[in-house]
Image (cartoon, rainbow over all chains, first blue to last red; front, top):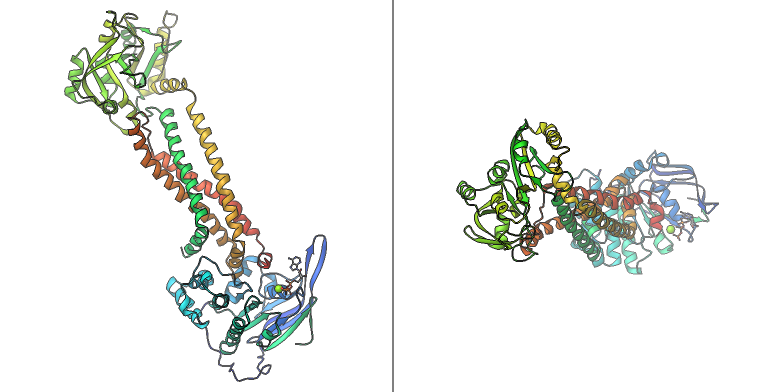
Length: 248
Length: 385
Ligand SMILES: Nc1ncnc2c1ncn2[C@@H]1O[C@H](COP(=O)(O)OP(=O)(O)OP(=O)(O)O)[C@@H](O)[C@H]1O
Ligand SMILES: [Mg+2]
């Protein structure tokens, strides 16, 4: 499952945006809607959404608070199921998987980055990064090696033994990115990863994400409020009141 | 095993709280050992000894004496191998607080019938041939620092002497021990000659307190017991014959149902423990909901998250419980010495096993509610905060 990170030779830095969209579609949403019960009332928070994200893409999802960005991201990442419509990732219908199968699928294919880092406070950076690898067949030495590679990639090799409390916000978020990367997932989902950071740290994180896309060919979805952040992506889609606006 | 760091991370998150919880578990299990020891000490006296021994007492009360002449009549019943007799002397050494069992017995037969009482051959000889001779158990000798050759005065409480005196003096000629640890209780006894007491006492001469009957075949006990009671039915002194075990049990019952009292206290202790630790576990898991949600998001299966929470509860119980058992193990001998052998409670294998079972059971009991809660945990809502 985890075989280290490969550089993507097909994604050189110099290529202009929009011109590289490869043919293979990684994410394919068709007719997605999602409703919640609020008390006795059904509230539809996503309305008939179609969205395609090709492999190697870096897409920013923007929109006002409450427009359904997190909800949409959760559906793509297999954390939640749509009320209607289909979610296919790399050709697989994940909206039909049982919750156990979904958990296994997430472990194998998705890397998560959250606004508040969500590291385990009692574990060192190294152990936090190793967490997803506990679910693989790798032995302790292999897990350590993979975690070190991931920490190197985010520029924190020297902080492996630090606990989250001993790291700055930006550093914690980089540990979280290393954790999301370590099992070499095909899709990285980031929900407001810079929402809690100062301008400078945010810029560092965004450049890191950009590098993961350009140099390593990772497919990324970035949810953000911040137009400056969205500029780092290859393209941006806007959500408003549960619907995608504009064209892809 | 690879999940161990996660387990420690959970336990060490709030060190003080974990420590306090551990301490309450230690205290509860220390208490458990003490109480269980009391229960064992009272409930199963000499549990394995004397399966081929019957005790014959007066039908109406165990303090009512029986005629001495019954000995030969009982001996004549088929299936009876040997008959000994004894009286409860109830003598006091120096102070009433120094209580220990002391009995006048028919020495020859009594020693023959009680092989668990180990006495060197030369001391046995001396005991048989010294009218004023007495033997004491090892524990009792240590308690008062008695040595062979000592003269031991006992003040009579039941049997004044016919010469008007009240002090009986015995010559210590032997110190015995039990042939197996679970019978250590007998090492607190003092035994001396029936003949010496019977001839010297003012009243009740020619009577005995009870007979001890050894049967040829333990399987034949019921028939022999029935034959004895039938033999003396409708006489002036009817008898009641029961196994030694039943006799001791009915004797203990006079003190009250210790087993029930102890079980009630234990129940209260563990009830409190379960409430206390159960609440702490619930709180500990509630605080960690966001972390557990992250694990589930990353793809940790429900099963593993559930086991992590259960393991945490069981580890606390096992650490605290074993700590309590070891503390009790260290405390019991200290208590025995401090009370000069009066409170010499046993710590048996069965207590350890029962304790271990309780730890796992309570661990499951307090771990299950929060563990099940993680199953119902909705990751999407939990991440939303
Ligand atoms: N479990 C739920 N039950 C009821 N309503 C929900 C639930 N989850 C989300 N919603 C509603 O769905 C709508 C979209 O929520 P969502 O979190 O996707 O918005 P968002 O675009 O991520 O907002 P923000 O920028 O504030 O994070 C909101 O109106 C929210 O109140
Ligand atoms: Mg959101």
